Amino acid sequence: MKYLKVVLILLFIAVPLVVFGAQAGAVKKAKTIDELAKMYDSTPCKECHAEIYVEWEKSLHARSMYGPLNTGRTGATFKTTIENGLKDWPHSGVKKPEDVGIEHLQLCTKCHLPQLEDAEESVAKEIVKNVYAFADQQDEKAAENLQKLNIGCTICHGRNAIIHKWTYGSPDPKAVYGTKDGEHADAKYPKMKKSPYMKASILCGQCHGMGPNFELKNPTQCATLYGSHLFAYIPEAGEAKPCQECHMKASKLGHNMQSYRSPEMAKLAVDFHVEAYAHQWRDVVTTTPQAQVTVELKNNAGHAIPDG
Amino acid sequence: MVLYVTAKTPDGKEIYKAEKIYMPIPQQFGWADKMGRGPYEKSGLLRDTSLPPLRTIIERFDIPLYKEEKKDGKLVRAPLAYEFDIDVELWYLPYGKKDDPGNAQMWNKFTKKVTLEKGGK
Image (cartoon, rainbow over all chains, first blue to last red; front, side, top):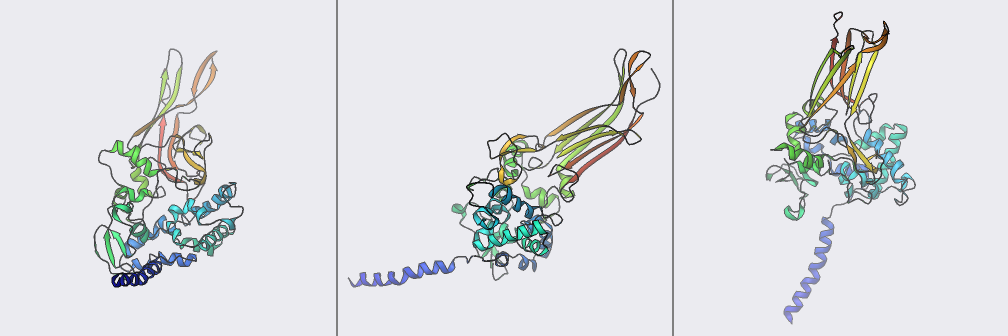
């Protein structure tokens, strides 16, 4: 009886500790764009990985919510999605931009800002406000705000570094994932862990996708490249190259991963050979002056071109 | 992607123009016969003319370099000129138009002057 009492007392103490301890350890959600940007800030990585940081800064990953500096195409597409999509669909719950929430933005942010899951609804509202200010008034401050949000180091090397979570466990929030285990000289991320995916196409395939994103209430289809890589490239390839081989290594672009706007990638992607000549063809009585042009195009990429 | 082929006479007059489009054609909501434009309405494909990986696509263009006219009561095909500029360009056009700074990209260009011989039978 005495033993049972001790057990009950211990349980009485332990259960609240476990429950409240777990809550205390849970990720605090961002309330503003600035807070979310700070949670996933890549600038501390610059201190030791300066070259990689400079490469990444030039990439579209560094402006995943805004798009290319000279166009802001991605930011503008957010507005189109709201105006032509969400507002037009009778069951979306969106009648005006202010109605847009995280669930709605996930049509795009699933890939353009996966960390939005770690934010409160107020961040979605702030993003939408900035999207409209940028798209309608070319507001520079709004453009700057959108550019604070990105696919930074801790997305691919952290949040998205482990895909099969029942097999390998969820990503350790104290670790930076790469190609080896060890210590990491950073107070926020003191551990370095090996991700089995770091040199594999599937890491990129999480976003550079398969087709319709069926997990969404209204599936979107932005990228189909990973599907093309699996079902069109692999059958032709023999020993298949992963995405990283061309987009990082052969292109010498490193973390400045590029696609069609990059002359380096264009050169690697397609062999272009043309022959042209003129001649005069004759049947019995008629001479026909004509030219023949023959164009040979060979797509060397690990996927169809273009994406779509 | 769009492949453009043009032929011009030495005075710059365009006598031939052809284009070939390579792209996956997304389907609106995965069932309609209409193409979906924005990612928010795309689901599935209607058709796919994109450049397939590791395969060579060969395109041939026969360009007529004549005009038909009557000569001595017979129909003849007279050369439009004896020199022609052939241009072939391969463009990546996310919005389908060349005049689209920051988006449209010319990947390859080929230019050649071709000639026809004068005289003879």
